Length: 481
Image (cartoon, rainbow, N blue to C red; front, side, top):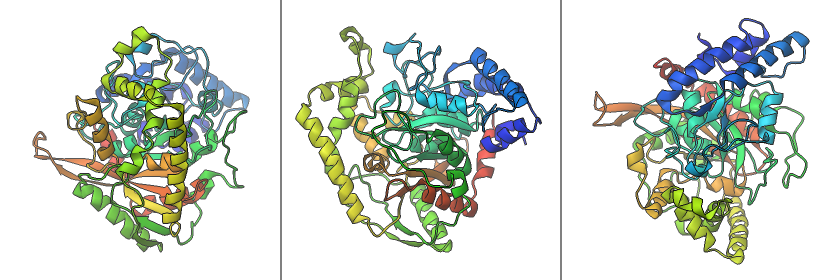
């Protein structure tokens, strides 16, 4: 098996056992980042010199006996976070040429674990949409079908992992931005609970967004959450850690859980649910029943109008980006539209949106009190071509986004953990494909009802990974490149 097909844990073990050096792994990764990365639009910047310096340091750390748990394992950082001395452009023309002066805390945690920062992955402008088609840089496409989006906003990260450039990539999720590209690329993406991973040195704002990783298997996601769950001074929210690690939780029996299956949309009222998306959710429900869990249909406690109460939280995020007036016309239409709307809200509107978010979270908790986990699809229509998702009018584009992924953002509001799993792949009719159809991934999402329950979610996800294995499909995709 090639190193590009290994999990991060397997690769770390090979480096630790001196089967291969960190420098050799890094050189091979940089080469693949240049070639395969260009095909899938994974990178906005490849850090050759920095990565090789870090790789040499990792090999020296093994010799000195003080190597981190993932020493020598390449992990790119999404271009929404800072790495000192490296371009930080956030997918925007207005940020072009900006060089980060400091490391974000998340960057430091990856470095402390010994990982190699091989580059910055592509993101849409300021990470707003669930597709990665920035004017400022490469367009991220799923390696399953290069004509289709890799999702967003961690689209470059998802494409890098699914194409075998790296086994794990940093991402962030403010409305689905880890779970959506995980689904578009047929890999794993966990959004942890609010407060599990620090946003330092920045601010958490309303607490919608969190850092995390995209991986190809459940245990890599768990192992890296162990690395990243490190509180920082000044964090507004913190989650207590249990005596066991998240990786250890993957080998635990979660007990008989109560699973609610939900196929109706939450953030809009009408969707085009692809038959393969429905099939993925239903086959997962059957697998969970076979594992001994109780599954029944969950109620839909909200509608699209309820969701619109929280538009101030999204729009003020755009309005709050510190930009000179002369830069605003250079922004992409969606960002300008969000920014204009955001400037129209008052402080009272924002406060009401925060209160509304908390009120809705309570409503959902009560409506789903009889369940431990809610099971949904991730992408209603499956991975789309950008031209079938993006709209010229920003308001229409935003509604298209909601119909594309009508479940993910709710669990950013509730602050509960949520994981995207690649349980299924199936044929989709496609007139542009040579055989009239294309095989695409269809993930499901397991979302906990209670915050702080990542261990339970990892234990359940590991059960599903064993029952519905997906590694062969992933390796087949990697070997195309």
